[in-house]
Image (cartoon, rainbow, N blue to C red):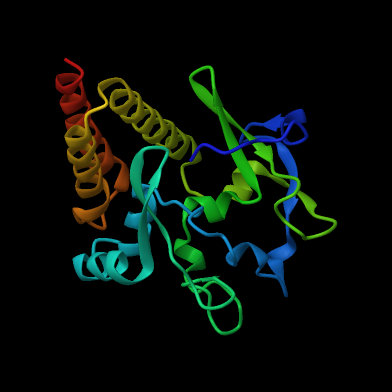
Length: 221
């Protein structure tokens, strides 16, 4: 998702090997970032794999009960549903704790960090105004993101970002309503609706990515 980034946030950027003052100490007694997030907790394909782990029944239930679909910069993508008067994340339990913490989406793992994409890659930055927790402590970015094989994950994130940007550029150039509907339907089906197995996620994603990249070349003429 394209977001406005403040100059303060970009005063310093980080790699996965850097230390950053982002550790919230387990967020004890606080769940502010799990409320009033609107459509902003946008999921990527690996998030779906984490949440379903090869169970097609869970995949169907996930899309019907726990997620919403919204247009994100021209592309239809799923986001976590917010419910109730306090607009709480649907996965927040009665104790105001995350019920899927082990399988939480990448956006949640990253927060309060963000990513800025430039020069064919990306760097991390701290969103200073997004988390109310005072006196955060320093932690290594790679430990905070809490994702095995981080280098491969970062490559995947960049591939996913580049695909969405390519799709947006194609739709902006073609300005074809039917193409927009068809391409969005294809992306949703290929990366979010078609079940994943519980095996290694990356080869499954890469196979689907290869197919859509071939399709995009044809569509680009």
